[in-house]
Length: 128
Image 1 (cartoon, rainbow, N blue to C red):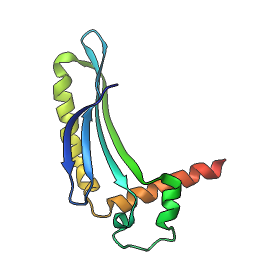
Image 2 (image 1 turned 90 degrees about the horizontal axis):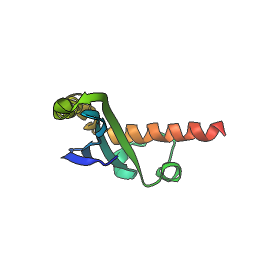
Image 3 (image 1 turned 30 degrees about the vertical axis):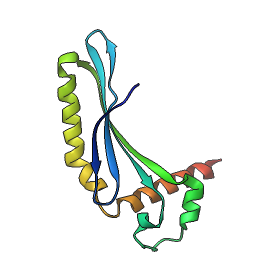
Image 4 (image 1 turned 120 degrees about the vertical axis):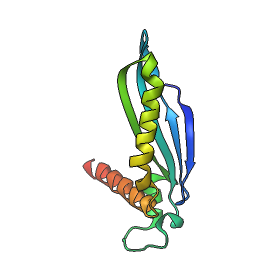
């Protein structure tokens, strides 16, 4: 599936959210419509704004996750008529901007997301 960049949004918390159209034709005039929001969240001391309320070091987090983690959210709809495709993509984009973007824009989002991904990775490792 080829993704086409729709919009790039630079946030005050230094993240850049990129919105992609990942739609593909499935049959005749029908589409699988997909709008993807993605941001690279760097793992560095700035991600934590000097907040040291937790017992995990940046090095431990980087060891488990690497230099960054990817935030991604998809909005999908199947079997969309060709004439409705652009309307659906625009609706998905506007929905993301109005409902999810305010949360991602929070100053503490990076820290919360990195810690969430770290704990998910730790749970996966503990199962083995």
